[in-house]
Image (cartoon, rainbow over all chains, first blue to last red; front, top):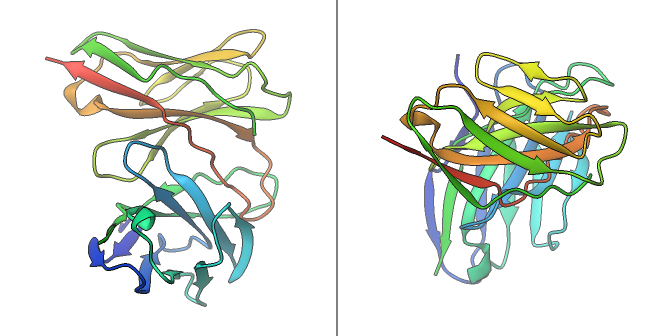
Length: 116
Length: 114
C-alpha cells in the first residue's frame, strides 16, 4: 500500500516567489496536516484539514495557506517567500475515523524547499 | 499540551538496550505520552504511546513513572537502523475529528554504535 506521498521532493525558489506543495494522503485517510521543519529543530505544526475544512492552524503568517480537495489531497501555498522559509515541509495524514479516538498520523517524506 | 524535556543526544552499542528518558513534570491527567522517531531525511514515524501503564509493542516498550512526570522509551535490542532523532510528545488523546496537532520539541539524537 502506498504511504503518504508528497511532490516535489526538492524545490529551489528565490525570495519573493510563490510555491505550491502537494500531498496525497494514504487511501481512506480524511485528515491532512502540514508541518515545517527547519534544520536542527523538530517539526512545527502549520495547518490541519479534515473534510476540506481547516481544523487547526499554527503560529504562521498569512503568507501560508492551504486547502484540501474532495479526494482528500492537499496543497500548501506560501507567498512572498523569505529566506527563513527554507525548510523541510512535511505532510501527515490520519484516518480521523471516529471522534474521541486518537488517530495516528502517518508522515510523508517531505518536500525540501530552499529559498535563495 | 505539556512541555517535555529530553537529552539532546545519546549513544548506544548495537545489540544493547537503548533507554531514552523524557521529563514531563507538568503533564495533566488526560494527557498521554507519545513517542515518534525521525530517521534522517524521512518523515517522523509513530512508535508507541501510553497513559500510565507500561506499554509494549513490536518496536519498543514505554515505561511511565507512577507520578507520570517522566517516562522512558526502551528499544530492547538496538540496531544500526534505530539511529534517529526520537521525540517525546505529551498531548490529550481525545480527538475532535482531525484536531490532532503534534507539538514536537528538539528530541534526542540516538546514535547506535557498531
